[in-house]
Image 1 (cartoon, one colour):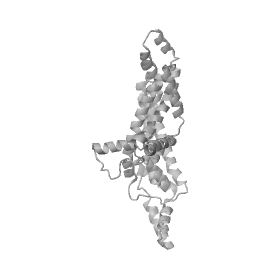
Image 2 (cartoon, helix red, strand yellow; image 1 turned 135 degrees about the vertical axis):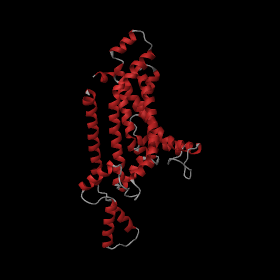
Image 3 (cartoon, one colour; image 1 turned 90 degrees about the vertical axis):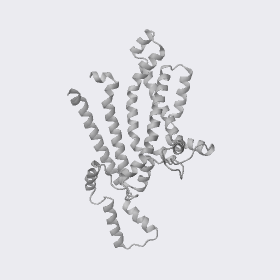
Image 4 (cartoon, rainbow, N blue to C red; image 1 turned 120 degrees about the vertical axis):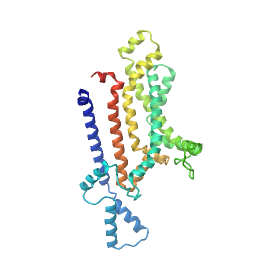
Length: 335
């Protein structure tokens, strides 16, 4: 009961508050933008040379407003939105009407999940191991070399690095395709021809995320380890004659991973938001590209669908970390 009262309940309440505030912001922000999806549809129709008298325009405006769920005041729409959200219904996409928003998300989600889960885990493991070893053996030549490489790579923005990879390996040295998730005309199926084609198309987006992710985790872990090596228990381990590899992995890196676990969970929780810049640069068919198209077209429902799932994913990942963290840190179990 003490665990539930002091540890579990406060974190569940925090999760619910974060989700409520986040989704509320997600609802109101698109409606404060100057983009009117109904007016855009009418403008597209009239720009194609179709003549419509004012009465027909008003009737079309009323019909589109009802179809898109934009009738009534903003707060009426807000409460209706929560009613649909509880059922997992974000309504139809405004500019791909009548396709439901959840259908579009389910089409794009596997592409983003496959890309981000793989790259996040790979960069987290490699970056933390290399950063931990470089922090412990900081006077070694290879550690200084890795540190210098990371210091060069870490400040590079994702979109610049993605463009560099795209120009180098898709145009100057055309090894990999420049865009898409698979070749045009390729039949989707669970076979080697499609899987190999998918891997080739995802290689450059994955490398842009993995390389910079390794550099970021390397720098963070190295900084953490530089403080741990000065702790008394590390000094006692060295004085006791333990092997350097044992001290590095069982004492230093193991304890340095504790704060990094939180970063891993938050990174995995961001999967529902997609890798926006990377997906746009490589025209990758994930949630980032879907969200970018929704923003450009003023698709309120699709924007709210993607960003709401992102808010829930990040908040859920934070809650999950809080719940499992006592398994990794005995100090929390003791308290």
